[in-house]
View (cartoon, rainbow, N blue to C red):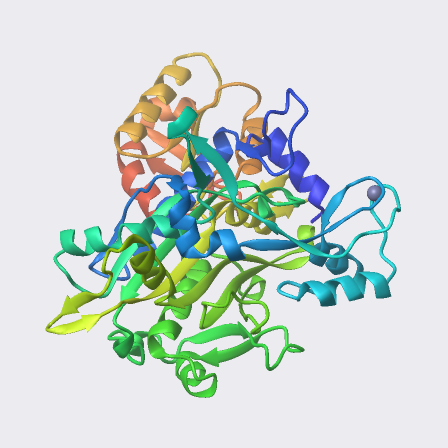
Length: 501
Ligand SMILES: [Zn+2]
């Protein structure tokens, strides 16, 4: 699907668009409309339900997005959170050096050294996009957003956080004590992060302000070769793209084989499997659009011992794109914050002093929302459908009186209130023909349509329509909550009665 088409559709249907559009918008900032907000919230809630469910000592916390400079000095962000840029000597335009090369040569140059990038720019004689002037040598640009706190002599420098993760690390010791000193301990944060991208692009894929959902799992590194629930995933087939076998788009490999063949620890592989299950089983992403990609030594951050990206295949943005990652950060973060803050981060576990290691499961929520929109889009003969998985759809059902007279609207309102009271996210629409109203819910991916007609007044039955098959059945009003719950849980509409025309 084309990028322009997605952007246009997202705007018309209330999903997302460039921020501050009534002025001259600034690249890298996006707002969500009502439909986008509902989808994003559901995605986040599914994420919480799934990942906090991985351990009985896993919890969500909220941390400040502005933190003092010391935090980011200790984390290494001020020194090494850098992008390579090339500046035009004529007009001053600055571009991401690896991106201009990627656009031209259609491969990834992430993590390549500055000198090599400069050499490639010279070799291919790449000029400024804007004025065709010559580009200077590749330099580093820091991605952190500085802010200042206070005024006068009390003025302090601080930064907007570049990743939610730091909020979990600075709270580690406190939470460890509060949670009664057990490992593994998981701290999740769903929140904003900020990166001063040089050339934000591809809408929700590369933004300057974005939402992350991250889980930091703190554990004893002596236990890394075992996971108590590994047997549950042992024969589960991972979809992998390894650095050894780059020409194969995806290799299928069981978790057992990944541990043996790729020399990855069980504790890490277990989480790769759970991440894949979240995508395939919970979000219903088509298998062929999902893979876990191993990063080469040059690409991964120096402190990550193991680093696999979560990638989804999206035609509109040029194929496989990173939407998250599983990072084994070892003791890098706790060690850094321990030394810089003077707070001892080692903890006592049954008489043994342990500086916990961290596996981080990190996802970009906005990128995932964009991917859902692209991967759910279907163009059919008479309609466009956003076939969102039922659990991620913005609403559970639309409620429609067939006509606005003879008491049908009142009856439909009653059912609307009844289903809302039962905890469903429903909306009411009485304008236009019933066919038009069905098209409108199809376009924003609402899985069920419930129509109230003249027969409803007599027999208290309503018509339940399935978005995907467009099949309809009659259901008793009093049975609707149970039926809708089963339908949203994945049952076919045929389970609830004979199809009607
Ligand atoms: Zn220029």
